[in-house]
Length: 436
Image (cartoon, rainbow, N blue to C red; front, side):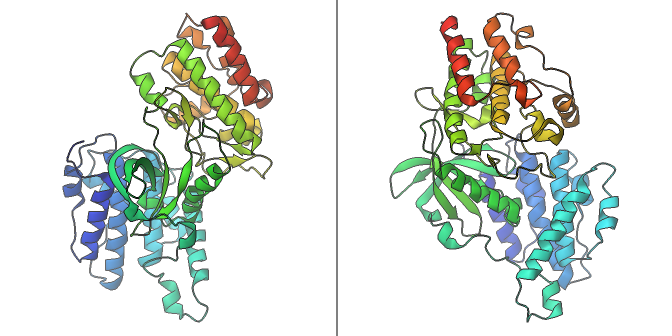
């Protein structure tokens, strides 16, 4: 382990500097963090904090000129921001300015960005709804001026009784991974003397009720599942700064994405891992839960090399009113067509069957089923009527039976895929006997 400050500690230090009345410099923070893969995310988190404090200061001292997203993107042009992060930051600037600043109209603000971000209006409308809900939560006797200025800290989205884990019981050791909504750290639980994994909701989402509810909902979802192939969650806790974290089993063997980057995966190992994943998913489906985000990074290996399914943050309930979100939810390259467009049907257990097929394709070929220069290119292929290429085009030594199973999992229409995770697991087990 190196002595570089952690992602979380840098953000906390930056926020505390603002709270002391200093004006910390984002560039100085970035220079202390050399993880090239996560520097863009760190920059985005720091911008969120900086925006809030600068616009709040301008609200009380109008002579001060706050920054806009364009100022940050120009100053840190050496770290080009992915479009999704740009959209999140556009929404955050809008939120801050509506709350503290010049209160731009939605139409005015959206027009400035719609050419490059066609769906930004829906995201800004959601911010408006959230801000209205904040005002509705204020006491009705509050004055008009007070109601226009939302308090510094919002009421907790969930009561403390539902997040009972003590933050001080855990010692963070190193970051294991990061996604759009959270970061995962190897940690030590002092009271029980054991290693655990802690998953933190990113700071930029802590004021987003939908994101918090989804984060906490992951713990509720996994609590319904008791299967050796599913990583259990011990509970929910809150940080001193009001953020949320989940404590879960530490699975020490890394994830399948690391195995792919290390070199060609054996056919037998790939099939065996997917059989184990199917067993865990069938258990989830029997309990009414669809994972909806299967990818190599969400399939961990324990010390015996067995697959453990994790990250149920995008899970859906079978039989619920499953609607397509304004945002496409999943991981590009591994999403089923119905996750991108409702034209292909509803999300169902066969959505996870597609996910298993996509991971199997990736394990066998070291490539996702669809590739493109941009996210839009990939998604267009996913929802098009063009069938996926056969994995044996990239790996000619694949047995025909296994190749056909993989292709069937990746059929565009859910009705053309295997009926269930159980059926897929049986088919893969049969194929495995011929490989040996």
